[in-house]
Amino acid sequence: MKKIKLLPIIAIVFLIIGVFYLDFDNLSVYKNIKAYILIVMGVSTLGFSFFNPEKVNATKK
Image (cartoon, rainbow, N blue to C red):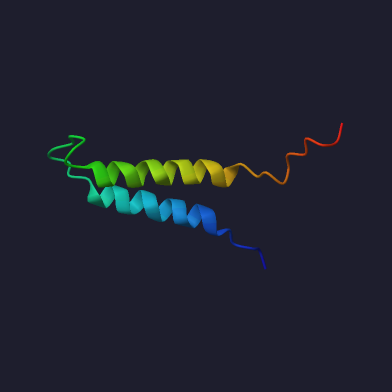
């Protein structure tokens, strides 16, 4: 059985909630600040989930 990673799922949930919070009639920053924060958190979490620090080994040469 393949191990399911939790971080990408959390990132996708942030993105989905952020898109649902957006008011598409008025995309101003002050009206949609919560949605923009959730979308940025989702994108950054998704980016960090693809970076696997276990593969980076800076101690060996």
